[in-house]
Length: 149
Image 1 (cartoon, rainbow, N blue to C red):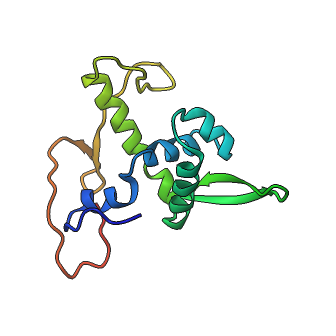
Image 2: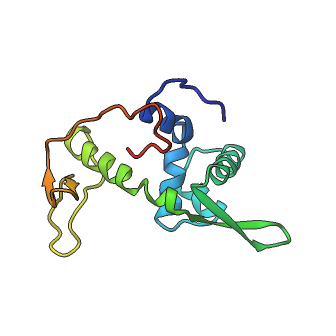
């Protein structure tokens, strides 16, 4: 895939990896347990086999999923989510919460498994050992090796 955004921004650079059409939906399918090409294709009506194949290869190259050969003739693969891919679960939850508040027709909600009541997104500061709503996005120093947010 070609990088579309040449901006010094975490959002832009993340979208270069996961922002193409169908990509997040494919990751979500693998995350929820649809692990074969046919399972994913069946769940995502409208995606072509060629596009799904391209996206799966790309996601594997990016380290978001892994494939394991489970049939040699014909070759068939099972896909599993990597730790990097699993870290997108919070993004999916945030989208569900946003949709619950803003979509005209909502299909899902996010609930606490134990009591089945809806939950909300919260930010936690390990330094203060407390939840907080007082958050800000700040620039990292140019010499920073790894982007942490």
